[in-house]
Length: 176
Image 1 (cartoon, rainbow, N blue to C red):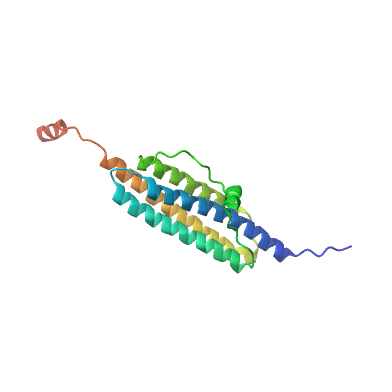
Image 2: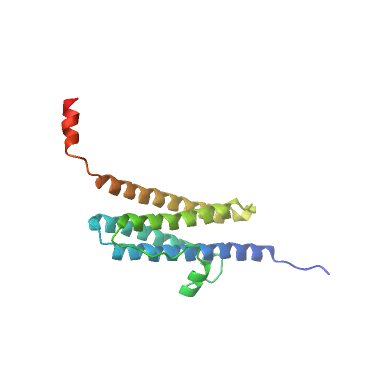
């Protein structure tokens, strides 16, 4: 007896499962980023808040794009916190919000986790009608790579700003 398998339905189901995991990761990262925005209390507060608010807005845009993609595939989007927690790859860690460098490093690790997930997904061979989904995932991956670079640049700038130059270094430079 020949079975009638709905290949297109299976493809959509597989794609939506990937998008649901991505949405969970993005939503958790959005929550962590907003929490950093609200709770960091260091000497660079204003600069940090502006920077993290921009990151938060970018992540929120990705969440909306993922939701729209699932909707466009005719599927129901996830939305409960339990579903997000069940699907996410991101780990919860204790935060020291008085240290903007540590907080930023934790956000980098979460972005890297999403990048690694997307790279693994994109390694899977895709059918011709999966190109739109693959391009979408590659675009999201690229956005996270840019945010990682921005976060690392923030840390680098912050560390360089806090370097103390000994006073006698100028005497040495003038003597030579």
